[in-house]
Amino acid sequence: MKKIFIINPVSAKAKLDYAVENIKKQHYFNENEDEILFSEYAGHVTELAATHPDCEIYSVGGDGTFLEAVNGVKDTGAPVCFLPMGSGNDFIRSVSTANDFDSVINGLENPKKKVLDL
Image (cartoon, rainbow, N blue to C red; front, side):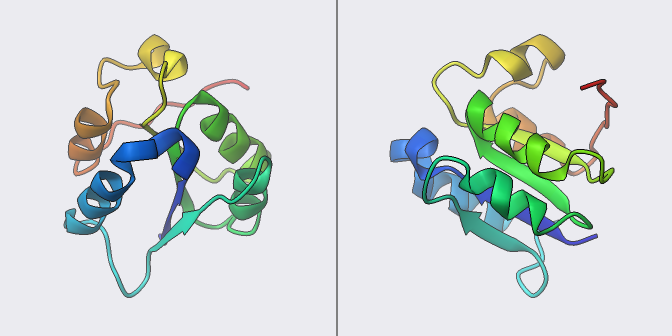
């Protein structure tokens, strides 16, 4: 399944280049098929996710970025992964022990999927 990495550059701030480099170096990232997109304004993550309902969505940012991604694909069944790069990342800390960017991205080789009731 095609992977769409949606990065909120405001949340990622100084870690933006680090995030892009680490996404691209993962063996599961296919440069010929997968995409890295950047949000440009409030609500843009939702729009970008909504245009890819048949893909795996990877939200790179904070809790708000993740919420926008989930809202973009709600009712489609598309999986959404949270790659935390925000200041608090409260959501991921409440649902996973892998709760920082490096832990999550390194764990994507053998992901454990959870179904959450929205």
